[in-house]
Length: 257
Length: 314
Image (tube, rainbow over all chains, first blue to last red; front, top):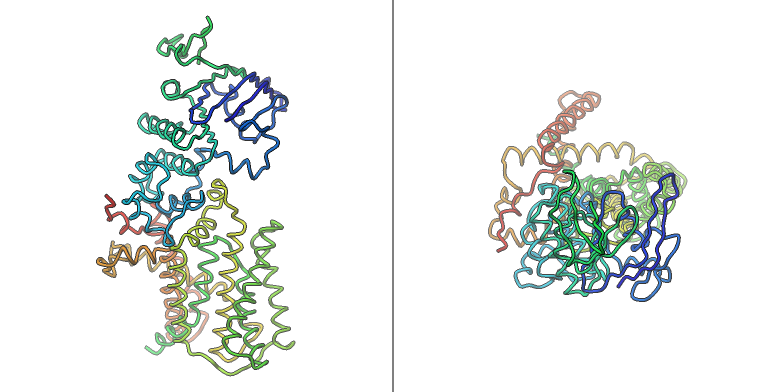
């Protein structure tokens, strides 16, 4: 569980950006989404939760313990990042199976001594942390990473990061390169991981439709100001000035993105 | 025919050194110039141990360990003090030559009884190559392979890559030291200059091997396992010898080791002088490099192992 109060942060440059988050709560077994326009402060807030940035004011609690009281190694054991840039680090000469085996091994799962036997063992439903992950991996497992498309690589990196079974998963615009099918699959996977592993998952996304459909709690950031939105009180289909979409009306106010 | 025979003999002799270079240059992706120094160290240590009337096998293992120590020096300078990888190798080479001078009894060379034949070294090299394929097919080998290939991936998965780079350098330089001892055991002599220009030899052998292997695969349009027709037991072999792509490197090292020396000896015999041989070797290397680049530019630098895609896991 992540609980944050009165977070204030500004970058030490000439920009007027100021992040202001009076209250934030991400509960275990639930999907919490953050939406907002470009440069509104979504990624900054996520970095603060991942202790990559220290806020100037306010306090963050992970499982009711202040984030600053955690050892750095403990934090990296606790928090996993689902980072699309992982796809650039994949080894193009090797197969998806090699990456899958490596990630399973790195995350503490026992794998066969000769790791290529994994492809046979999968039939017996062993060594699999999550059924949805297995389904996604199975389609690609015997393909060479160099032969995958950019979207497939990103999907693979997301899947690999999901295998790491961390207590808290932070995802920063992981669906940016994915088509509608894979984006939906990503949210379904995250939902399944949250339920099965009791993980706390925070997703930063531009996909309002999927966020409103899958998230249990939704936060909106407008120019640094973080607000919780009632999911039941969202309307998404009104087009304003041909470039902005009215996404929700809440507390007699209309927010646009 | 005699030059081909001599070429095969020489190829067998230097096979372990080329395997060491494969580990360092291709698996660890570390341009370790120190391989020359550790080769000389291994050679000097076997001479030193034979002067002390120690067991031959003790000398061999000691040579490997002394080589690994050289690798440890390179790795420490690189990992801990963040020095340039080329400089780390140069420092190790200098340190190794001074150590060799001491081990050789403050002389530039030493002679001792011949202990081995080229065929035995070749067999040892083949066993070593198979052992490497098996090792890199295991989960520990996979970790080392990816640590060399993409350290960023391991870091993002929360694994310490520095230690893995050290292990790879230890392994590569252990084999290099062992190779120095084996070559000296065949020649019955060790000198400070035994490692001269060996770096060029191993790099050119590797390039020729990889070029010829990709040429074979390109012409046949067959994967290696189909080429050898392992269809019945292929899966068993793939599981054990796949080696995360290292088996490809080992096979190309073996081809390169023989090809280099056969070309070298045939040319020298034909022209009657070393000078022409060098330019012919240079031309062959350049042609193979251009060919490899052309055939793989739309895929990736190594030829595909298509046999894996044929297996239906459903």
